[in-house]
Image (cartoon, rainbow, N blue to C red; front, side, top):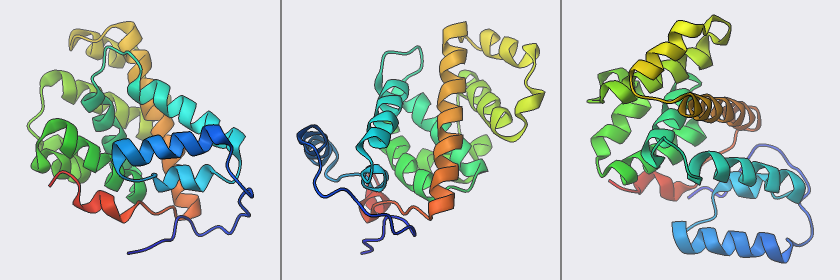
Length: 188
């Protein structure tokens, strides 16, 4: 098992606040681990809070998108960006939420060959285009999502989740962030 979190040697704070310790305990209780991305951000509790607040809002708050759909966006975007951390962690989430290990692996490798609904396919095509060619997003792309059953608020959420994972993929790549070993065997 690897204990490496990132390739960066950043001095961490002496002790975590009670709030952060409680959050890490909650992660341990619910997930069985503290995700390495949280450990990576813990050198600065302000940055950690900003990251977790945005993540929790995008991935867990009320939305017209299901939790599975949001995880699917995370994986499709991370696949384009070849983000080892996010493909491992969020691939595990897709396996768990869908109850389908094959879907999780197909999403990591090539969502286009997965057995997806038209709604899911339209959502992922938009997220991937936003990742690869953001300057080429036009009204017909948004309209295709509407025709697939998404509201304008859903389009905002799809865009926000895709944008968040493009950001986190780049931080993970720049720092050589490594996923927790436990993710590799989850929901198989």
